[in-house]
Image (cartoon, rainbow, N blue to C red; front, top):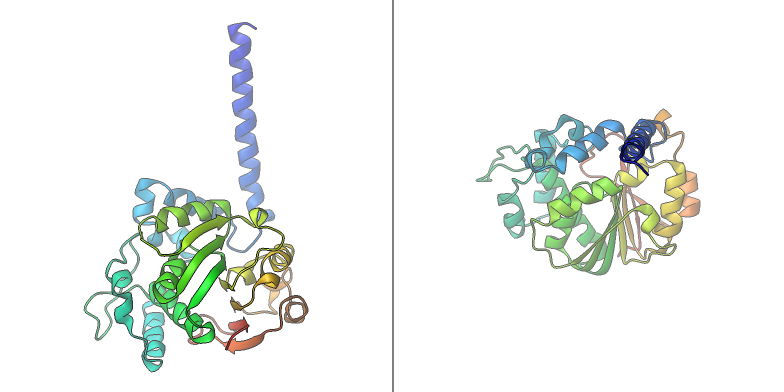
Length: 283
């Protein structure tokens, strides 16, 4: 094989690889596994994985369309709820005082010396609710859709967890790994795509902050058969059902049929009108 032939074959291989990547990107919107699985979100994740992008990924407008979008007013509501429940925020001092990774939006709140991120406050509120519903000790928690890892950090501060597994898109998992490397967490961490989940992945508790309800019906069914059915307890925050965007999602009757027997609880405070919690296995 002469040198020119080798160069041509190498060039054609690179062109083929580039075309495959372009097809994958273009197909993302059309065949998205969830509402979050869109072109801008993928681009934001790719940027966040660079040294420069990671420093400020929480202020990337593309990322804020999906995550890191709690407002200052949301923070006031969450603080009020936690005050009513007598949550001692001093146990979260380390998280709140060092909450600068990714350059989050933080605001001044009365009776707090340092500005706080309302998104981090929401993660803390969820961790406290999990403790109220189920207690503190868990052998394994599985989170479906882990954002950048914020819920994992808050849960590890509030609970006694031996193993914490996050199931998500492959590029989201890369960001979670990078983010969580900045913390010393007591639990063993595991990161899985849906296809990497075993067919009967057991856990003490499965949680999801909105992500499960955003998935397409086909992917929801996969997670139910692989993960949710095998969880002793569950805490799932659901987005509003019944509007046009939910035509390709399991309706409430289907969830009642397919999931372990659950009860519906209010989301307090509501992050959007109509949101609710699905809970099972609680005290």
